Image (cartoon, rainbow, N blue to C red; front, side, top):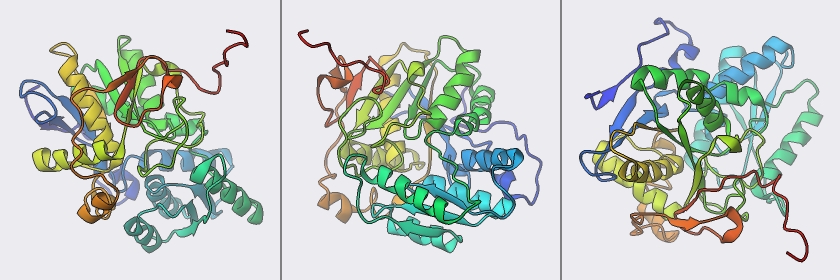
Length: 366
């Protein structure tokens, strides 16, 4: 495959439906400066969806809930979001006729707040983090309050709803059509939906598939301690049940400054870039392309584009205030043998992936 840019054959005929604009996103070949010129990886550009990658699960989950009668015509939809899933729900609400309330926190970018409100969403901002579950748990508690106050309302529960995972089957089939063979999948992990859904389909076709998870420093998903996090869209202060731990060969944690560096390198070198998740995934996928045998075909999922991050990732003043400028990523990650052996504060890799809720603590005396 020699073309640097390709798309899947279209499966939707032209039409006036908003839903027809979701899916069939292109892939782009990414090489220097992340890899030597003769190496690289394929990036799936989900920014070509109207709102990003989470348009897919928002539409799918809403449609399935309507089919099952869980979501009645015209009923309110209420959900917790850091932004991108909110865009998808507003799209689904517009298509299916549901008012949407999005519960978020003060970390939501002002541009995203304004965009969601302009599109018709009600935005409810919690004011205090949960003492142990952080902002995400505080948001979930507020969602429960709003659901109780509005009988008949529905919450997609993106963290635990298996429909979130199923929604990504079409994306996996698009990758197969575009790339033919896939040896390594690099995916960020937040709710766990797209990494689980894509890897399940790909592994059925390619049993040798290696899945590399990309998390944020300060995230609890893979057994690290919870810390305040700047990065949105990946990582979590709770333990989503959609994370398919058994699918991952390894996990990498990436720090905010490293993600900013990678995002800006992408913008300068390939034009196509995105937010925190995109930067973190590009950093790890470039390393995978440098270290795997020649000929290994690597697919990386870029969940969104740069537009919601103009006041953060691409804002020099913000990045300078947060100490995120002039911090180029290392050539290789640090290593942990087990997730609990130390705290990842910069790019770190671990080959042991376990569900932290099922790991038994050491017995006394051992």
